[in-house]
Image 1 (cartoon, one colour):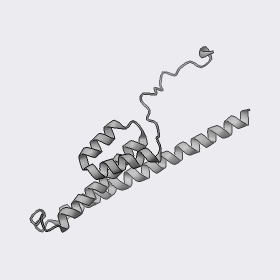
Image 2 (spheres, helix red, strand yellow; image 1 turned 30 degrees about the vertical axis):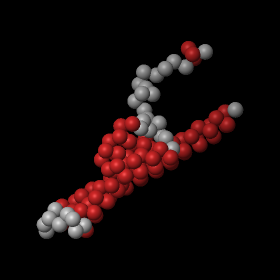
Image 3 (tube, rainbow, N blue to C red; image 1 turned 120 degrees about the vertical axis):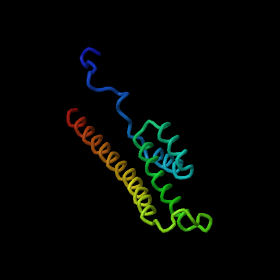
Image 4 (cartoon, rainbow, N blue to C red; image 1 turned 120 degrees about the horizontal axis):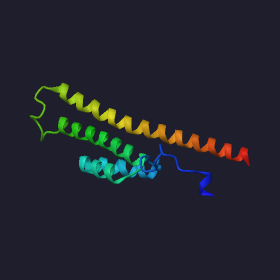
Length: 128
């Protein structure tokens, strides 16, 4: 029966990532947000799902925004910007872009996988 469906040479399961779920996304997000770049590296490298990778990117972007705001408005870090507020804006926009990129791309992949699964179920029921 295996001879009826030979494996394809151009498709490998090792090259493809699974989508994952919202729990993995939130776990990687909070790990990257709370533990900053160390949490980002760990959650990005440990997870093997799209949800985990995009959650880590999203959490790191928000963590970058958090630290920029802490450095900017804290009395302890008084001489870090010295009138160079363009640098503050660059890191703030970079953090926002990372945050929105991770969140929006995960939503796109999740919706695409759900629509493909629904189409597959419809086709399956139509054939049988």
